[in-house]
Picture 1 (cartoon, helix red, strand yellow):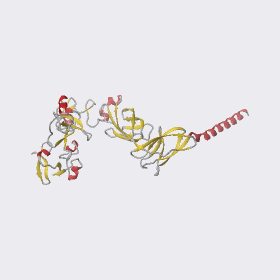
Picture 2 (tube, one colour):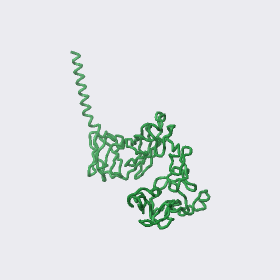
Picture 3 (tube, helix red, strand yellow):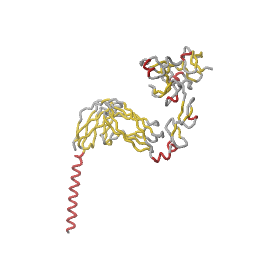
Picture 4 (cartoon, one colour):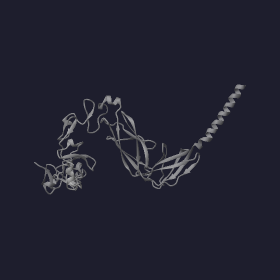
Length: 373
């Protein structure tokens, strides 16, 4: 009899506790309502900072409802459009709905990720996540690049991972409208280091050597035209506008420089438009040409392809590229490009208009730059 009494008592107590939990559960979370003054439904999203799983899409009129938000202070992470975002602090009351003032998104920031390895190994399955936000497990491209955003003004922890590399955490802040470059060097773990580049390959521009290391070269065949392999490095002299990784790949009197177009090439210096006095230049021991080679003009102290006809060094290197029409040459950056006998060239009036070993000759399309015979 006594045992039955104890069992019934326990059942009553457990039932009371269960009822208490059921009654209290709704008061542990609340609901947040709001509206964006500007939004694009194809990208707009509202989530909770630190809990990106608590999220809501945005309606056509900019309204959103965020449910099951833990009671207490919280912060909303808002992506409004491809270029605008916001962060809004709220106080959530358990079991109640909170209405925030209309949110006017502001210009967002972006992280331009530049990830590479310390050993030149190729990145495999490389991912980026911004902790506490909806930006999770975003894939980097083959060159280890990715633009992450739009990010509301604030500071974030970014994690970078790849197969064979320990996860790396970095801190970064994104200001309104800022495109911030974030460079990350991943160190290879011991297991992958022992396997060497035979396991994952090497990044573009490097080759996997017999010693399982990624090198620029270990034979002349790995180097471009006019370059030879010396000490596992391709060395010059390369012509003007030739792609390069250092001065050792450029001809005497020229140097390797990153150009406005974004890539590095061999360039010569000139005195034409440089605002630095020639006396000061001489005092630094720098060699400046007083003029530029045929087909080049002096721009900000550098001899560059004539901008009226070439969209930079990368375009000049498209001379003789296969083509089917003038338009196909224009697409390669040859602004007045002519497709002559299946190869791209440019128009000219005299020999000085033609870069490199070319002259201005007559063709069915008029006067164009042609190789010297």
